[in-house]
Length: 171
Image 1 (cartoon, helix red, strand yellow):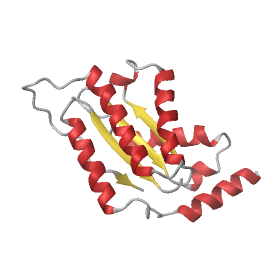
Image 2 (image 1 turned 180 degrees about the vertical axis):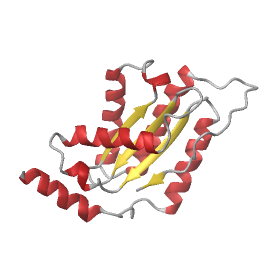
Image 3 (image 1 turned 90 degrees about the horizontal axis):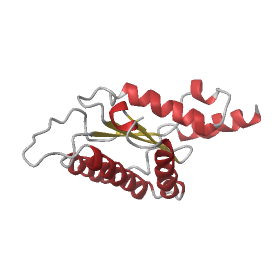
């Protein structure tokens, strides 16, 4: 119970604290996503959330599991699942916990082992935990780009519609 109260206080103190996410950083991340999507048919969406809603914080269980549940919820809310080739990927960053999650749609998820996804998240989390948010998000974009290029490359004469916004969603 005490852990949940500490969690609640930490998250409420972080509400609307996107101070470490400046306008220039958002522009660079948007440009990085745009450049990435010129190489494959997938869609990348970034979601940066300062804190979780109380409904998540009061749930029993490990914070890692709760964060994953929230990332999956945002995956649906942001329509990452709703792409033509079912190959969208959400890069989810939770500032209050300094954690990052990757959620891939069914067209891509079955092509990459769960262990590989978990290893990617672990590797990406190091920069985020060290408060190097832009480095961590840039690494995440590059990692996801490599996976999408491997499995869903864009042909030389192909024209792809941009199905989702490239700019990060802030909550």
